[in-house]
Length: 416
Image (cartoon, rainbow, N blue to C red; front, side, top):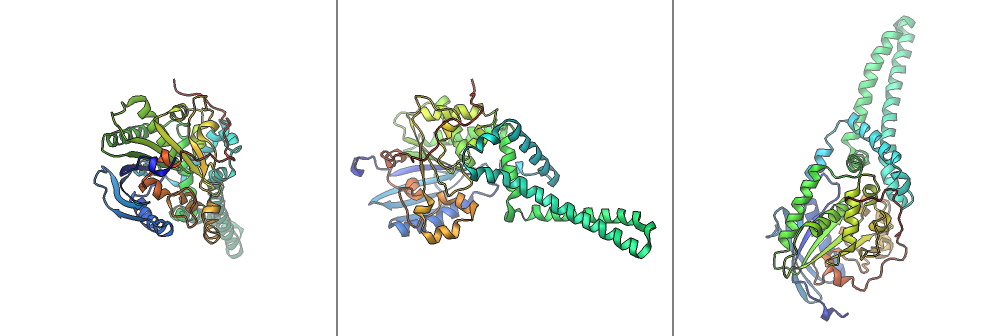
């Protein structure tokens, strides 16, 4: 099919759902501004940003692009749930260690950890990293306390004799305990360097309901659904939902609820879903994730919503090339999506840039939203601001051959 046969997008609404991120949404606006300008210079098209987006109810921006001779106007809106994330992180240091124990128990006792380990090693390492990091921090704190206590006892015995040893031990325990706590506090305050608390809270939030969504999150998803349906009433050519990381499975549930509960407006624009760097198995493999598993099945069968899932083996924080529907045991004969393919970081980034980013795991997890200096057929800015609908752009795209699409989850039941 030639580009002249396709319906050109002149106006588009984009809704972006971040992952488990406590930071304000302005970071995504500045990321889009910086990276879109770089990609436009590399790829030879024009793109400009203005803020705010006139039609956005929340935090958003307006994009004007001219690509392949076609002008497209796009309003981007961030679907904000960072306040929920921040609320889930309001716990003490001891509370975080309790989350560690309870979360580890849930993933181990339900068999979920053993199952996700059969997929990609990267996200499993990411899941185990905060466990080892927090235990290491606790060990260092305990070691510091022990050295202080021993130092006080040795000093007292040498200067005052054995009779002062008990008092020295008590004083050493007080000082050592205080220094140990101070060290743990320092680790927590500097978690921007270590990401141990951040990742621990992320996994703990998902595991708290053993895969079931918290009520506050369900209410927020309902709000997001209403915003998307309001956009479906506007005079636009495409409404595109983008879900990144944990935002990918939230996007699945929002769209499944639209299919279940909403009436499609007459003459409605195309509705599409782009999931990026998903971590779906960390939730869908849990025993009480019947709601999410049912959402995956329903969305995969839809003829009305185009679904493209993009990951990359170079992203160690995502389940790269794992079909989220199939590995969760929800593939049926009626399955139509998603189209699963790789952003191929090692090919779409130059050797110099790949070398610079190779060990920056969290930065690579956001590469889907950034510029590629050797772009292939994935360009976030052409998808979100260009003249082609998502379904048309990838109508002839074959899925990646190395994808995993067999059932791996132990738990496959869905909501009634």
